[in-house]
Image (cartoon, rainbow, N blue to C red):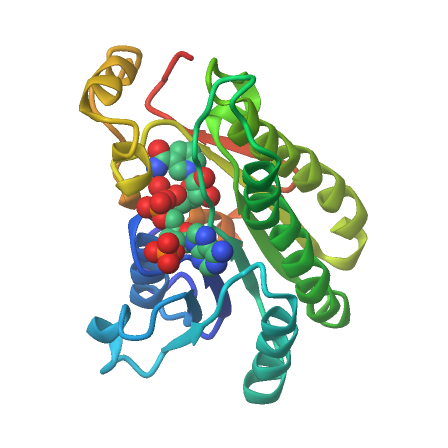
Length: 245
Ligand SMILES: NC(=O)c1ccc[n+]([C@@H]2O[C@H](COP(=O)([O-])OP(=O)(O)OC[C@H]3O[C@@H](n4cnc5c(N)ncnc54)[C@H](OP(=O)(O)O)[C@@H]3O)[C@@H](O)[C@H]2O)c1
């Protein structure tokens, strides 16, 4: 099927849009006709998009529950509906077992899990009323396979996998689909934070022979946001170039 505007008229909300995978999803959704509420933390980080009236920057931290509530009130007031939620914002700071501080655990869960649950709860109010909607959560191959040195990060992404499957079952009768994308090694700041030597080690286990690009993930998000995936829910879709962990 060839349709250059797969998201024409859809209202989407995407977190972590200033860089990496979130930025690629923002660009892809805008190119496909969506109006996108783009969550970023820093003013000015979406200046490239000022001329695009369909890009609506929202400056907030996803762990700030008051901001999350007022964001959904803003979308309701301005659009009266919401079609797609992408929970992309995430953090990864690795530490070996014995070196993981309580503060570190709380910060990582606040961004990677608690904020995702908050967003799903608010978005599902729209989706239940409309009897339609698509939620896309960014999990990780590490949340499915686990990895040495990544107990904390992998556990948050494992939680994203489980909450995706539970939400899919609960919201299916309301016409709402909930899926997760589990990227492998995607060339972003997050991946580069582990150092070039470690990135090269990971690359040796990617059978496709290259790192993933943010656009590779964005194309899968486009499919899940669009009506092409109307019978797809509760799935965890790997975008990993046949990576072995
Ligand atoms: N890259 C990979 O290989 C890979 C693999 C598997 C899964 N993932 C997942 O894919 C998603 C995107 O990853 P990425 O590689 O694009 O990461 P990235 O380059 O590190 O970007 C992370 C994004 O999340 C935002 N963010 C973090 N904490 C936030 C908060 N409290 N409130 C609002 N925004 C916040 C960041 O904003 P700031 O710029 O303000 O920090 C940034 O826009 C994440 O959930 C990640 O876990 C990535």
